[in-house]
Length: 212
Image 1 (cartoon, helix red, strand yellow):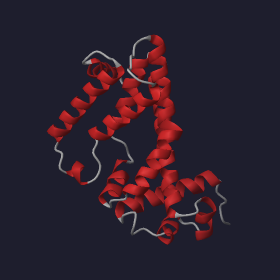
Image 2: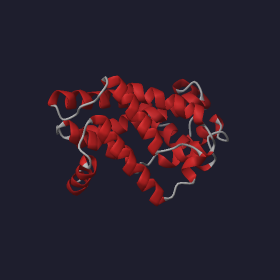
Image 3: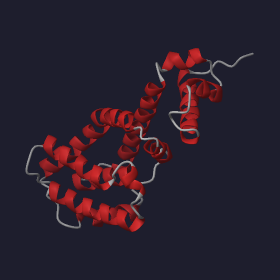
Image 4: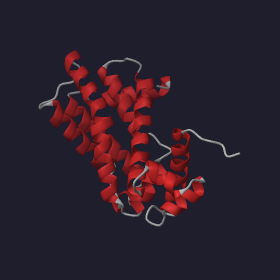
């Protein structure tokens, strides 16, 4: 007798098979047929959930962003805005199980679809979280920005992008140089948010020692 699986379980099996294949074969080389075979589902099942392979990749990105939001909500524990921002930044900078997939997409120069997914995740997940932190910091008086919250968020993401250059440039950055990138980036972010120099570094050490 064939076991009937819940839709969410079916989707999870497709997600898992797709991520594995994208990392092993590459995104461009992986076909829908490859994914359905690995997941043990019919093509009709795949297309019931996802119109295209690109839509599937977007769904994988959304699930990653939603998982990030859950980790953030569990870690921030109702602290003040500066501490919440430190948690937000630390989660972005920590290793993630999805990193190998993103690295593979970069190696394949899949920049257009990555940017499309990223912009949607910014709008749906990351910017609402960041906006809440900045509004709290403004209300507490712990953050002082020269412009509006929207312009501050724009400059933050510009700095963040500069800290983590995409494409071939990233491959030529060694560990020591990456440390410099992060250090300079953090100082710029402190200036942007009106924080004292060294605030983020001090909070990162406190956060790491407390396991938050």
